[in-house]
Length: 72
Image (cartoon, rainbow, N blue to C red; front, top):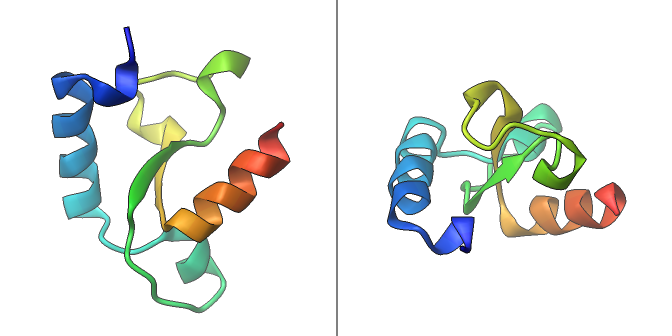
């Protein structure tokens, strides 16, 4: 079962991106870049909640790649 390919996740993520169209990290740093993916702030494999919106943020691909590398 791949969460990110499930129709439930795709619909959920689409709604979050529509509500949060800009990258959270870029906005915090004074830039405006579009959100391209939904990120789990606390990774699922570290006990982060899959569906809790308080554990999710919308990021551009660059910020997501940097955050994911730092999470490892």
